[in-house]
Image (cartoon, rainbow, N blue to C red; front, side, top):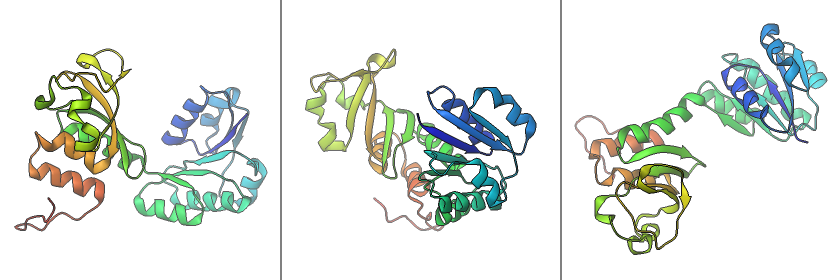
Length: 246
């Protein structure tokens, strides 16, 4: 059975804890807030009230062979950096840390975190594409370059089969499933399936490809530029200058 340690029960740590409690795993929690720890004490395998600023505290509480440790000490950025470093020195294989800022995340990676989450940035990445595109309904990054999204296809594809539209070659999208008419459950789809404008398709593709496909027939160049600045981290063109992106 897999074992996980959650060090710090700020909002992200609690969210992870609630998810893990639904699975057949063992969970160890640590936080200096006794009231918060007591809420979960009877639902986890081990619970400790402790301030983890000292290395010996971490070594006493967290087993070296734990499958993964999740760090969420809220705005105690220096403490989270120290804890990530302690766990790295202990040989913990997977260390997931919540960062307050991108700079905080970079430091966490340098001292040993294997995965860093910046919740505000991740939320913005998921919310902005559907906000700016009426043909996109959800958006989930699944790697640095790939995303999964729910989209509608443009009107000129109406009545064509997926094979005829050749969305993989023409648009760089891999169609995973379809929600016929935009309602009900997603179902797997064959190349012979005929597209209707009301259908919602679950697609996977590179970030820029998915965004470009969704915005191509509805968004202005200004919105597209915003997407590129948001997700590629490029600097916006100076006022009065045109972007050289096409």
